[in-house]
Amino acid sequence: MSAFIVLGAQWGDEGKGKMTDYLAEEADVVVRYQGGNNAGHTVVVGDKEYKLHLIPSGILYDDKLNVIGNGVVVDPVALFTEIEYLEGLGVKVTPEKLVISDRAQLIMPYHKTLDKLKEIARGKNDIGTTGKGIGPCYTDKVERCGIRVCDLMHQSVFEEKLKENIEMKNQYITKVLGGEALNYDEIKEEYLKYAEKMRPFVQDTSVRVYDEIKADKNVLFEGAQGMLLDIDFGTYPYVTSSNTTAGGVSNGVGVGPTMITNVVGIAKAYTTRVGKGPFPTELNDSMGDWIREKGFEFGVTTGRARRCGWLDLVILKTTARVSGLTSLAVTKIDTLAGLDKVKVCVGYKFNDKVIDYFPASLEDLAKCEPIYEEFDGWDESVANARSYEELPENAKKYLKRIEEFTGTRISIVSVGPKRDQTMRVDEI
Image: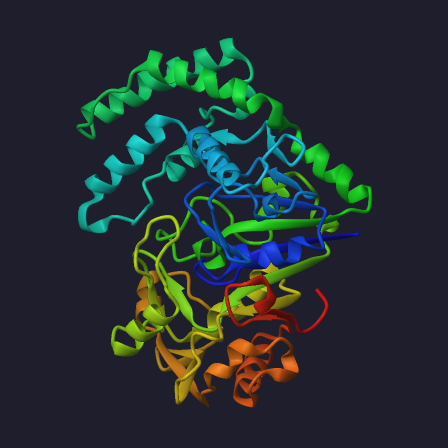
């Protein structure tokens, strides 16, 4: 039995979808434990490309159980749009392959409205949300007025909670944010239709996942965003609204931490982030543009260009500490191929001291100056490697330094988007 976590070790977009797909071959169950459809995973299988947002990446296998845990916020519109998209590509999505937690919170139309209007109200201090209602939905969860999937399964309960929320939200939307009121009847009718479509997929997933682990099944827990977007340990307030760390699994699925055997952190060979927020190693020059174009660094969900910079080992060391990484999977070293020199950040100069951790205060972080080590580059032959031994020597030296600094071994290296461009260096 193995119950292991796959999480992003940076700001997201590290290749979690591809790695989950790759590791899912050895798993029996794939579980999403946080986030919503504000993240995107791209998986390439043969000559087909799949873009996933809410459904676990294991759905591309016919023999895997996929679970949307209670820590995920579920937009029924997005859910069934994604199901139709997958089925259009020949991927079956049935209640035998996909189950949804009855405790998961529902994203409602007023959450999306509030998300967009609040961003406008923030002006130049906007956070850069996707506008998909994720934050307002988690807000209602903590405020204890959210509507859960189990509520939708009971029509009278759903109608009562929806009515209370619509009355309250419309006051705020119209009188404070200057928006238009939402119609209770329209939302009620729309969601009651989704209730019947969703019902066959709904169950107590905490019990289901626990039973699968106890039955000696291999269970893979899949994160949606990177560690530096965690609500507690990320670059607050430029973060997501859930716990993206390994600790988020217990709360987001309902299994105890003693059941987790391994934690795999996914990291690009360089660093990217989308939207606002600090980025110590960002390259606002032709080199940053070169990495963006070669790595095709544009968001799956938003299409926004990603900010690019050198690999920041301080971030990876922080992730290793906070999430207890047992190994790293390094992706996209092929993107850096062709450069004469590559750099990695091995510390920050802060107030005349050198630190190797990520400060909480954005004001302190703004004063941090990255300290770099420089390495000789490698050529395009890296993309043809199918084993660690076939990698160029300079690429191996680069990877070795990552292991040394973070104190975490590398178990997987990826040299391209396809399944066969992924090599196992060590056991998970």
